[in-house]
Length: 203
Image (cartoon, rainbow, N blue to C red; front, top):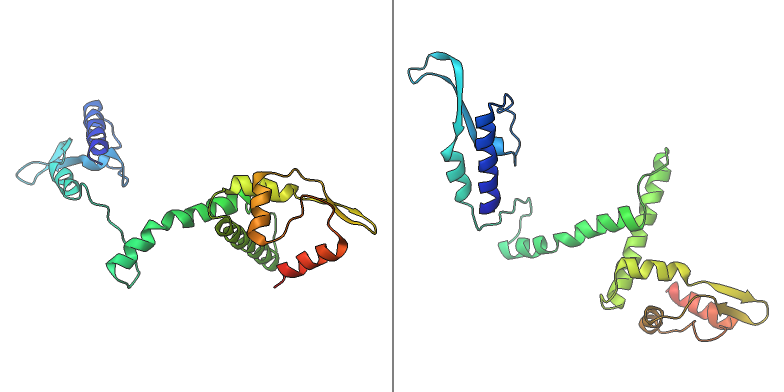
C-alpha cells in the first residue's frame, strides 16, 4: 500500500506543478486527496490567488493504517467469525461471476416481474446444482471444465433397446459417474436402467 500511495503523491505533486484547475474534485483513491488549497492569507483575509500544496496531515493519517486490512461490517458477531466470513468473500464474488458469465444470467430480455423472477430463480438453482457437483468432485474441476461436458452428455435412443451415449468418454465423465454411483458411457443403457437413474435424481 505504501508504494501505491507514494506513486499517487508523486502524481499529486505533478498536478500542483501543472496548475491544474480541477484540484478540488477529489475521489477516494484520487491523488488529489493529498492536495490542499488555501484561498486566504495567514491573517484570514481572502486572497486573490490560491496556493496548492501537499497536505502532510493526510499522508500521516493514511500511514497509520499501513500493514492493516480494515473490514467494515454490520455483522453482530465475534471477530474470529467475521474474519472467517470475510476470507470466504471471494466465493460470493465468484458466484456472481459464474451467474453473469457462465450461466449468462444477464442481460435479461424480459419485462414482466414474474418472468424476471422465474429467470433468476432458475439461475440460482443452476448455481446450487453446480456447487453441489463441485463438492461431489472434490473441487478438482472448474465451471469452465464441468459445464461444457454436461452440455455434451447426450444420448441416442434406440426403440426397444435403450440409450446409446453420443458423447466422448473422458476423465471428467468418469469422475461424474463415480461421484453419483452410475455409469452411462460404456455401453447402451437399457430403458429400465435409465428410468432407475432418473428416479434417483428425484430423491
